[in-house]
Amino acid sequence: MKAIVFDQAGKRFGDVTAVGGLSFAIEPGSTVALLGRNGAGKSTTIRMLLGLLEPSSGAVYVHGRPPRAAAAAGELGAMLQEGRLIPEPTVRELVALVRGLYPRPLDLDEILALAGLTGLARRRAGTLSGGQAQRVRFALAVAGAPRVLVLDEPTAAMDVESRLRFWDGMRDYAADGRTVLFATHHLEEADEHADRVIVLAGGGLAADGTAARIKAAAGGHVIRFTLGGQPASGLDRLPGVTSAEVAGGTAVLRTDDADATLAALYRRTTLDVRDLELSAAGLEAAFLALTREP
Amino acid sequence: MLYYARIETLRTLRNKRYAIFVVVFPVALYLINSGIYGEQTAAGGVRQSVYLMVSMACYGALAAAMMSTALPWAQERASGWSDQLRVTPLPGWAVIAVKAGAALLLVLPALALVFAAAVVVAGVSLPAGQWALLVPALWLGTIPFAALGLAIGSLLPPDAAQPAAVAVMFGLSLAGGLWFPVEIMSGPLRAVAAATPVYRYAELGWSVVAGGGLPAAGLLSVLAWAVALGAAAVQAFRRATVRS
Image 1: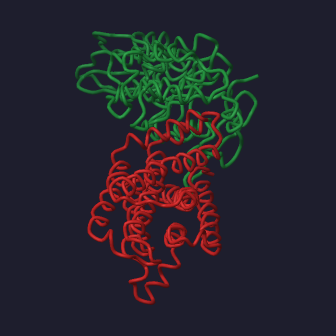
Image 2: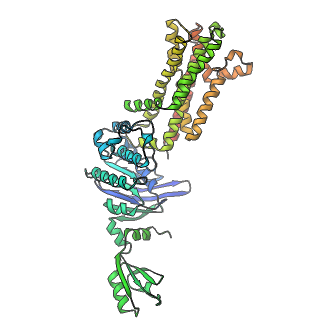
Image 3: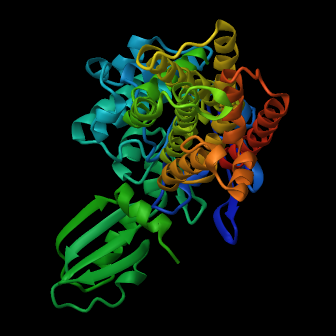
């Protein structure tokens, strides 16, 4: 059975379509990044997945059940965007509270260690820094040992060190065959930490696959060389070229067939090509190409 | 769920707002007023120190029931904490039930402190039978106000819920005769007072200390308020948590 299924799930707020007819399925045990710009529909997608929003059309399933039923069975854990903690209880009390609500939770000390909170257990939640509070929210998300862990922009308020510790914790948690879905607009995070990247743009699916496949699909290589004062016309008609830009005497060609483009550049043009560099397009270029607004 | 109830209760006890409104305020007012008027005779032929004990205990209990519900709940909704809990297996009804239960529990220290001040400082003494009626009546009689606090917390954002709860609390206390006895009010004001749940609630206590037992009409009225405000609270809670 799939861990997560979106079946033509859509969400409208009045006249605005936040997410339109989204379909994908996620295998148990995978770590998936939901990548998109602000406003692409990431949070709406996540809130539908957690049962906090009812889809206006279509359906969402978590291990074969509607999200509310899955939540009631303790299948879901979440770190929500901008969620704040209630300030009065201590870190330990908060974690104990949430873990006590699940049928088969992790051990309390194990959770505190996993989230790097052992030294902060006695602090009141209201006295924590932003990064520390974020770690507590991670602890609350994993406390019940849910099979599906959902994180909405988890590293937003973290400094570099907290971020590293956080991803270590997430990897340990996912290593036990659990499913993790995290939303982010940091490309490196998706590239580095996910087996699969689902790219959302304008409330719809823009791309879906491994980071490597998405990079390849969106125009594989970038060729850069010094053009000087020579005419630039015709560069965009070379074989394989998807876009050509000239700025300050430097030409930048994006191509999905670097060999053909290079061969043609040398044999079919009379240009004096200097300082040529060939590089694989990063996920960033792929992302920009995929989510370019029309 | 028991642990959730414990955390909810501890939370309020650690909160300064609760301490000031609920603990310091009614006891201080009682001591000041009973120091001045304590020996005079109030409505129903009882000493002012006894009558005021009921008024201030009612005020403290009312404050405890509303302060521990309206603002914390509004804040939880706004901060995403209630969403955090909704992702867990905790059922929605448990949240409102625990909050109402914790609010009732927090009424007890408010009542106990005013009673203790009355007995220890102002030398009030009541027959055991009267205490046995007074305490449960003034305790369970706060159910309508806990429900009202939850309804306010469900309907308003935190920065509006706080002043709204305080205004409703003081307004009801004033109109219901907790600050000035209904007997000195003019006719129309008296009619307003009789229509408030707070008057009906405090009336239970005043009647008991005057030796009149629990008035049936008053009990029914408080019960009706409990049902009406309870239904409103559940309705508001649903609206606040189920998003379509």
